[in-house]
Length: 452
Image (cartoon, rainbow, N blue to C red; front, side, top):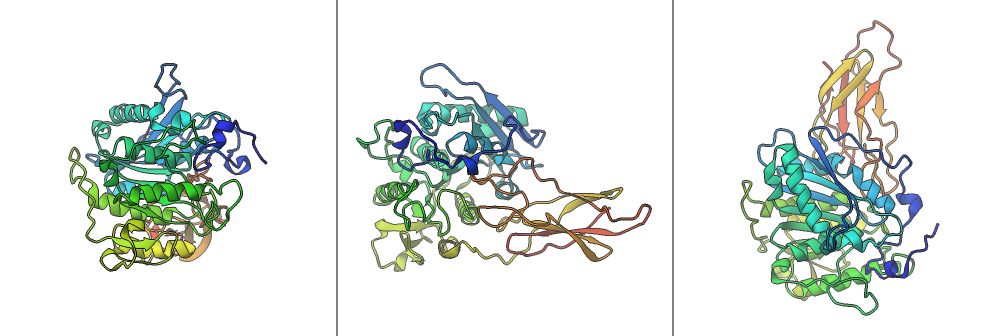
């Protein structure tokens, strides 16, 4: 199915408005929100008619790690352009895997959801200068007040963006480099040089401060790297132009080509999360209210752009200002696995489920995701024997099967998958012992937790 778009929309540098509605669209009804009860909080702003303010309505949902005393940062999971992608943003803050990263660093997890009609110009929000930067900063104040964490308004930002969200995240780096700890740009980058063929898009200015912010360009190989034609072929040239402009001036920018995908997000989270983990570890202040630390560069590794091998920067034989920048050896090793087949390894099992409860013949439980590999499923044991797998068959048309399922824009599907199992084979009055085991996406199992 091909959507006819206004000419101005086709001029975007990374083609993030060429959509696949059958992949992006959620099933109706479209106004269903996951409940935003603590530790979730939500605000919604109507569209403004004032010049320079956001002309689209927007929802922001934030997750605050339970028991966190003072937040040190906020991780923003920003969807892309088009109606389907915007709706998928409604579940961004509910992703267990991204929550694991946020919790490790005492960060909030924020999921914006712009109410952009399908044919509307994405620049209305994906250019931060068109009101979305101000709306985002306002939501941090308002959500900070609602959650009892007013420091949310002042903490640093770690930005992840897909397609138009990558354009937005990169634009936020260029507009507010002093606030951004790191930015992951999946299939979308901002424009740095004016282009006569793209007059509807304003170029950004690259400052010395922005060069010090770690950034990662993450296109799919079928977006112009190995597939040179088609609807997404312009993504790679736009990423190349952005990368060489930033890196040529000494910027801390890398490239991680997804070897399996086009515009869909695929398995990128298994590279994005450890990369952001490294950047947050290095840059976040120890306590809330402090300034971002400079990103260390003495342990950096370098790699040929769109290549497969990385080496320590002090032994790299090529031009370092044309090489992809990686923060350290651990990330470089993950990068070398990711760019070959996305099969990033993991040797640590996931955390064991908690609060396993039995009511009648229904089991419920809580669980946190494995930081490295997320959650794929749960094993239900009855009287020491395997009774069932939840889900019976994991779903994810874009990458590794995971417990919450995934949409095109790397967010959980609705309705959110509950952690529960009903033993319909249990005989009335019979007493059984139940245990629940968590399984991550590389098949490693947690210790079992017995029901109480």
